[in-house]
Image (cartoon, rainbow, N blue to C red; front, side, top):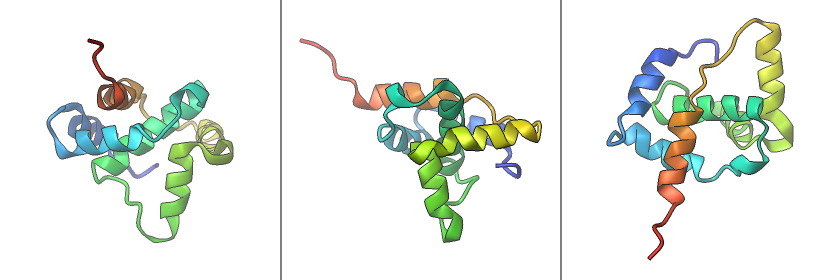
Length: 111
């Protein structure tokens, strides 16, 4: 997460019509946001946006770990957040983009 250009991630995922935004919606719909604590949600949303925009790869040996962090498997996203905090590093808060995308992708209008 340290090497990600977060300004480019935010730019890539902000346009609702972009492929990255569509990928964000797909990935974010898989996360149970009600169960994710705020610090973990911040990390998960940043990872989703970075992966969707192509600024963080999920191939290779780190792929499964990134996926686990996105899902907050065994509280991994919260642990990543704590580790980053000790290094005075904080990923940007992309929850408005990512979670709003998930809500847009999974909501339906009532008749």
